Image (tube, rainbow, N blue to C red; front, side, top):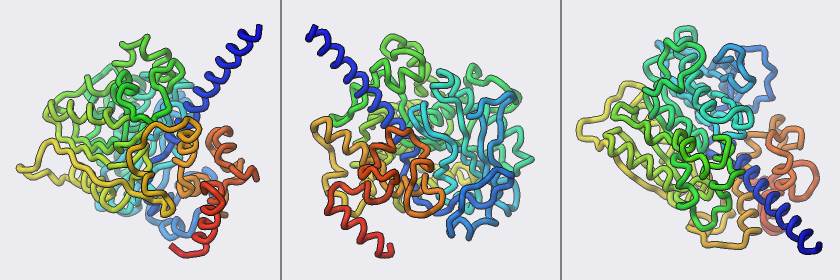
Length: 443
């Protein structure tokens, strides 16, 4: 009897551990892209209640028209909507950047839109942030069908919103990176085009893929030693995406992979991935780069040395690279004849935490599971939480403001006071004192 009880307890703890890892990764994945917050939403053209704007947003209120919660299909699911941001002034139709959020295909939302925060509407672009059905709502291919339906809707309404329908780009991170890659490679694949506006093309003219998965069946075999999430598990985000264990449904897993759809007519790609990503192995982007290169598709693969799953991204070099990519392929600036079709480059990751130890951005060796989970918690910087969740700009995030899962809030709230502050993100008492001191010193 004691043996049976012990066995049942072990199974329960194993299950809870797996569920916790999946939940935590999805929460981190929802918007872990570290993009400098240059501009936020400016002026809402609808009657939807808005959260309070900070001073920086108020300074740009007249720069952008915002259209929110636009349904892109008939009888839309609540997630089959998009937000559209268009420059107030332009000389003609403007190119469009379409943002697709991450979240393990099971979490996240269109509400966080890095291209908007980075000021692309002030650079002469329109920006759309699209929602799509998550794996808890419907299994694949619902997610790519929704993305394609959104693209077709945007083209069908391009004149109404002053969009240049010949110059659409897709940009996404993690699960969103996977979906934009699949958008790019499956432009000719009609089986994913279902629903409304089928007379419109779902092709995009450029793709920026931040650390998106490709071959689900190779994710575990190339994971870094410190990786915790097991993608081959029947409870993994990938298995939930296709509606069954990926190892028992290899044909369904293969259909998710953007690589088999590649043709020489695929649009140009910019792929960015950290070589210490514990969630989506760097190898996943290497596979995509190799296949695009072999097909003769214009592609740049940039590795951030020491970067994790979005951690270590950003900085002037990467920002200029992404903007240059969009300027080149959406604003009619053709590459010179002598420019390489395929190129792989690298640069050091950006360390945005001045208190981080030097080893934080170098390859990690296997460590105890408790330490790995602690690092996962710290993988969400306070600046990201504050920017995304602090709706009243009071320097703290209450439980009611936090849009992530309650289990994650409880782990982040280290002092248990029901609010998230910078103090909760310090590793020990000494670092908390440093954090308090830094708050009083202007950046």
